[in-house]
Amino acid sequence: GKREGNYWRAAESVGGSAFQQGNIKSEAASARIASELPPSFAPTITAMLRKGFWLPLPSLELGVGARHLIGSHMWAGVATAKLSLHEGFHGLPVPGVAIRGAVSHVVGTTGFNLTVGGLDFSLSKRFGIASTVNVAPYLGYQLLWIIANSQVIDATPGIDAIGEGL
Image (tube, rainbow, N blue to C red; front, side, top):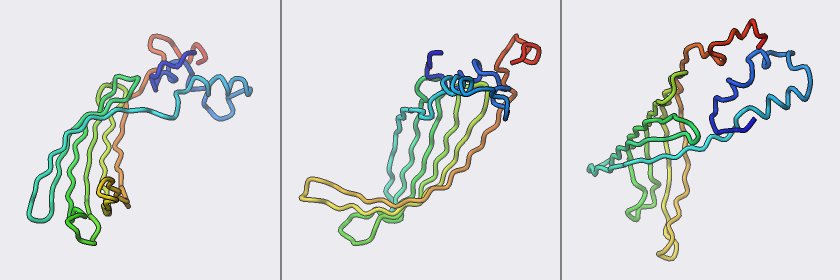
């Protein structure tokens, strides 16, 4: 079948029993199932608005935005807050140090709820080259919390999947 970019289309065309261990009878059946699965790459597009606030020390940046999973009806609202203990410029040889928190919640699907929270820490130092190029090496560490739940998803509404042998 033609891949339409809908990442859950495979659940409608491939019966769940096909994935049970030992149920795939041939390499041809396995190849058919693999060809109907969506690609592992899920492209998104994001628009963000960020506003920095100057405080004597440190600085604060707040952001809001929206992310769309291309080829679907799903959107995610995004909110961020970044606290920079030192910005890493002003001619000091000290790297920039920042802590950022983010939260994202997916909407546009009735099958599941997905909220992702993150906390990351970063070190960076900006260098100017020939007064025309700015280079900023970056070191970071991120923690993610994924909160996901779903209802029972009926891949074959109106059809008795057990009676049809799906």
